[in-house]
Amino acid sequence: MALARPESETLMVLGTGRQSLFMIGAALTALPNIRTVLCAEPMDASRAVIYAEEAPAKLAAMFGLPVDRAEFEPVFDLDEATGRADIVITITRATSPVIKREWVKPGTHFSCIGADMPGKEEIDPRILADARVFCDDIDQCVNAGECELAIKGGFMDRGHIIGQIGEVLNGEKAGRTSPEDITVFDATGLALLDLAVAKLVTDEADPEASGNVIEL
Image (cartoon, rainbow, N blue to C red):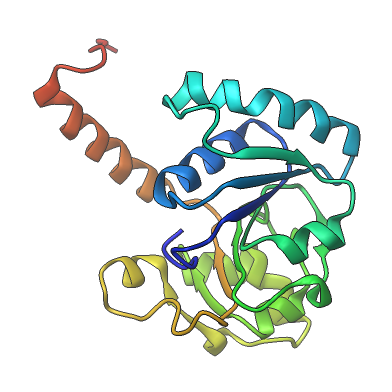
């Protein structure tokens, strides 16, 4: 969420699997102005209805987030919903673009999570061509992330990737340079980052005597 506009109010999640709840929880925690969560399920729109009804209670149980923090709406028109969204998180198994470039308004941020293997692709490569693109790991994203097919298709090259998200978090590189920027975070997932986060959590939990210690 470091690349999104801080005043963002509308989040769209594409894909309603269990991982999406963690993404929504993180977004609501990081961006207090979010008031609408659009729930899109490209494979079966009826699932989005059930998801939108159940998600607030699940988020409250999982993360202690207030159930009235935001309105959850099922998506039936992906074109219209994309045009409303300030932030789009994609978490699907798609192998061809689900979101088209012409649907996207200036200033939108994309977190592309689902393209984590070669051949997977969730958004129009023209979006990446017009965006400020960051990765969790450039080598991995070029070979197996959202960037892979955009590069192979000639829409961008490796040099179009501005940097890695850690460089933004450390202040080494600018993420968003204007409210009009389209930004993309291509995340394939890294075990090293998972271990770093796990250590941070355990370090924070220890002084509070939180959690349970299990001998393995």
